[in-house]
Image 1 (cartoon, one colour):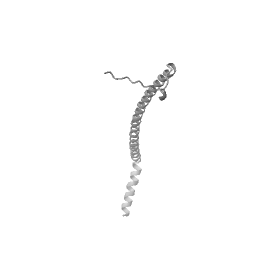
Image 2: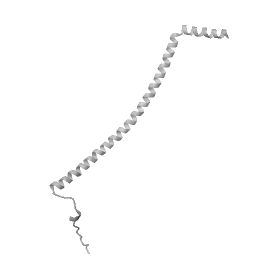
Image 3: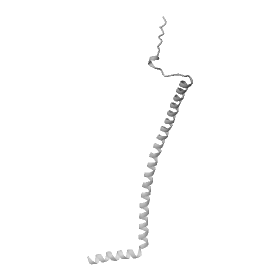
Image 4: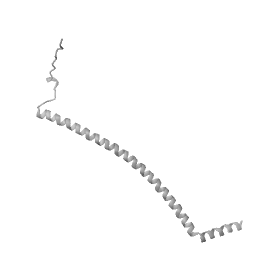
Length: 107
C-alpha cells in the first residue's frame, strides 16, 4: 500500500510539474463554458420578459386609444349641452312643467 500511495503521489507531482499550462487552459475552458451557459440562460430570461412587456405595452396602447375616443365623445356631448343651454336657452325637463299631447289614431 505504501508503494501505491507513493506511486500516485509521484504521478500527481509529475503531472503538476509538466502540465501546468494544460491544467490552466483546461480550467479556462471550463470557466468559459460555464459563463457561456449562464449568459445564454440570462439572455433567454430577458427575451421572455421583453416579449411580455411588449404584449403589455400593446394592450396599454389600445386602452389609451379607447380612453382618448371616450374623452372626445364625452367632450362632444358636453359641448352640445352647453350650446343648447346657453345659445338656445333650453332647460332640463321638470316633471311639473311636462305636458303630454295625445294624438288620436286615424280611423
